[in-house]
Image 1 (cartoon, helix red, strand yellow):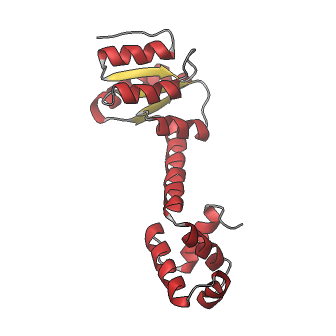
Image 2 (cartoon, rainbow, N blue to C red; image 1 turned 30 degrees about the horizontal axis):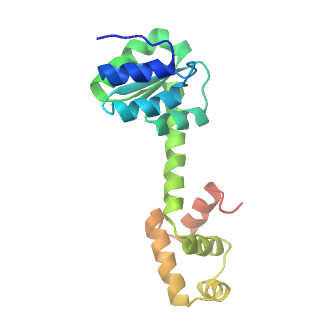
Length: 182
């Protein structure tokens, strides 16, 4: 079965009706853009693989596309030579990102993972992290937060475990990369 939609809303309705293996969406469709259509198709036909085509690409757009649930992302000017490969890859393997979009997607995913790890910290752990990367000792952190040094040590151990870090140096690098400190 093959169908063609004139806009994003129609694409969602057709995906719900036909439950296709693969859907190709233009990011700039009228009525409902490709990112929002992807979200809605994910809900009505979760097994459908979705390829986004875009004339303009960016890391921000790549993040939105992936977070919406797309399985592939291809620039329109690469479509002539890569569209068949992309659809085949989605059908067989589940995903396809062209070399140009793949780097954006990889950075977006790393950024999302960092946000997820950062959000895994409790507010108190974030406070302790901030003070530790400012080179405060456990005793100084304890005094500032009005908690025991043992509690600071416990928070520190939990932070290191949650962030999969093994030294304060790694914690400082993590804090700089994630703009906890400058």
